[in-house]
Length: 134
Image (cartoon, rainbow, N blue to C red; front, top):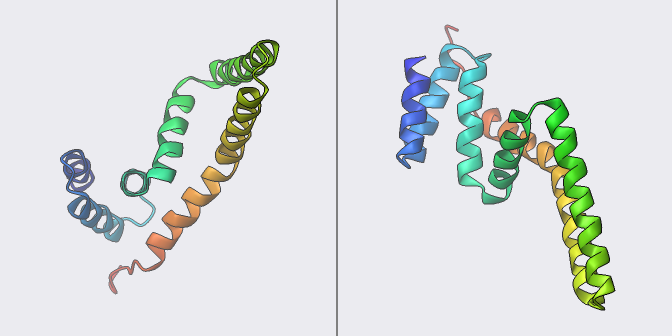
């Protein structure tokens, strides 16, 4: 626990390499440690802005709970649809088209983000070796 906590402290201080070392150290002690994997995921989110954005969005959305999450997603869709219609009514078809492209990009991003994040984390951990006496 102390190793993982120190890893989080180092990550907060911006010492990413040292935080990663603490995460790997904790994983050597317990490869199934959810907290150590969580720290590694935080480190990965910090080092990759594309995946980090998804990680932060996902963290916010999961804190809402299931009912609020569904309501938030419905609200985002309604805002998108109303915004598109308002832009069309104002004869700003190009802006409405760009808003539609932005919405499509958001949907694709939230669809493939978890898979990409999981793959990069797995790639990071595949080079990780356990102690021989474990």
